[in-house]
Image (tube, rainbow, N blue to C red; front, side):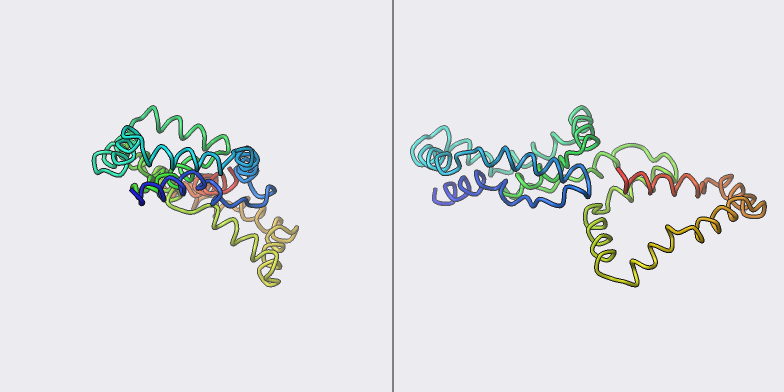
Amino acid sequence: MKFLIVLAIIAVTGCQAFSVGKPSVRSVRSLDQHFVDFHKLLPLAEIQRVVVEYLGKDQEVQAVAAYLQSKDFSDLYVKVFTVKELKDVLSFLEKNGVDAYKYINHAGGFLHLPVIHPMIRLMERHRQGVESLLSDVLALLSKDKFIALYEDKYQNAQDFKAFVDALQGKEFEALATKLHQSKDYLEVLKTLKEHHLDLVKFVEIISKYFSS
């Protein structure tokens, strides 16, 4: 019973563990800040007191708490995230700036439930070529960590900043333009594309992933 009470206290205050990044980085971080603002309106101490009181004396609440820790619930939890309609809803939320899987896994972590990955949705469908493979691989990456590392290095590592600035400069732009006008280079791209290696498309997919 003591464990159930501790679990309830953690669950109630758990959303405080979400870190809030810089709003300028991505819209999802700005949304996180909005969620934190709503969280501040919760009377956490009073909620904790009520939850603990119910866990201490209410048999139905105790039964529910026990079920949430059972293997049956864990299996059901995994199963529900294979439902196509639910995956579509989560996908919609993510496209609109809400890191749905982060919140789901944060909440599930208190009950030691399996981690749910967006890749489950991707891996369940039939393979659809190299572009699909690239998308599935990108889904395994931690985009936030890559962006955070990039920003940290750009702000704090002069050599890295100089390199990035050079890539964004007029000299490199002129070189890239000439390259894409080269008949020999375009012939290579054409040959690769005929063998399902559309490098231009791959770059577009990667760019879209990190800019969305």
